[in-house]
Length: 126
Image (cartoon, rainbow, N blue to C red; front, top):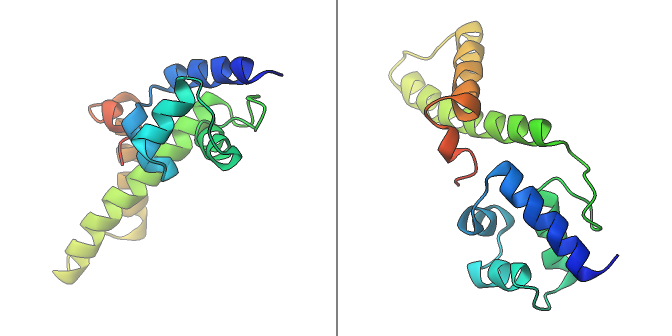
């Protein structure tokens, strides 16, 4: 496999999941310029390639390791847990925390908002 073939696979995947350079940079802990250099075909470290492909659910050769739906569901769940934990922590301080069943419903509803609702555009934002 050539570098250009890998780059093509990564570009396609990036577009399929709808992640921006900025979000990819933040999630991979790589600089924006490093991400930009990779996508323009410049030489980058192998660790950079690995970080980018892992975020996109690909292996080092650009083959799919995690399908897009699973990748999106995993990200939506992470974001939902984070958001709900903020609300739960604040509510618990005020002695108004949610019961476990209600908490799970809130997490699932928030996850669905990231997948199909008002927050869909924020799925990959940090």
